[in-house]
Length: 227
Image (cartoon, rainbow, N blue to C red; front, side, top):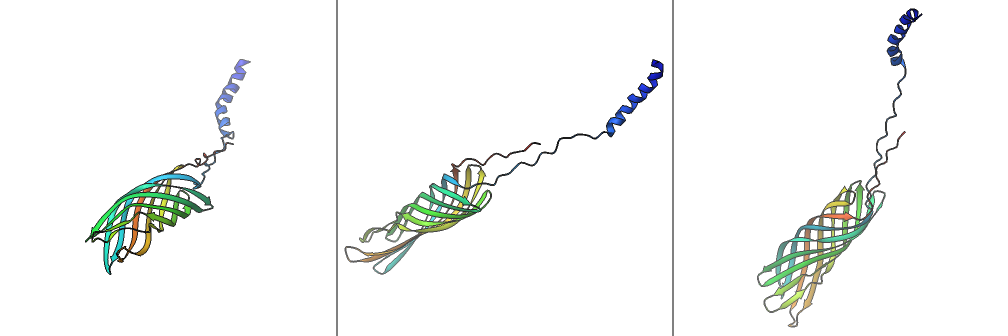
């Protein structure tokens, strides 16, 4: 009996791999790509910056004008809040900058150690990139000294600033920026106790780079569905 079954069993064993190869294979369904969330600029942030300031001053007394140009390293800090609506980003920001402009021309000296501002920001977001315009009310501490005995005078110290910049979110809560801003403190006119008419005007150009930390929660982690 076994002798009769042996050939059949041997033929079945040899055919088994071929039969198995013809059977349909069962494979797992491919995983979908990770879900990518766009960057959200909404949140409170604080930061620090460093750059340069260029001063343009004009002082006039008794019909004589003196132009003074100065430059200084500038650095400080800023804080603000952004709200993103679609691709538009609206924000408010305050900053204080220290500098050291000290320039003399003839018998006139100008000193400026502070720039500050409270500004609005309007930007357009390209995911992790933000292009923005900035502007608002600016403050300074510009002081003029006339060594001809006329005296010391302080500028009105209140003006405006406008500018723009580019900001990039390189981590969920960290951004880096580059910015240009122009300050103008107008023209002030007055008369000394000696009835001498004098006037001065002040403006600044600044360029800076900065880094900021945003306190909003990080973007949600990517979710991968399994089937």
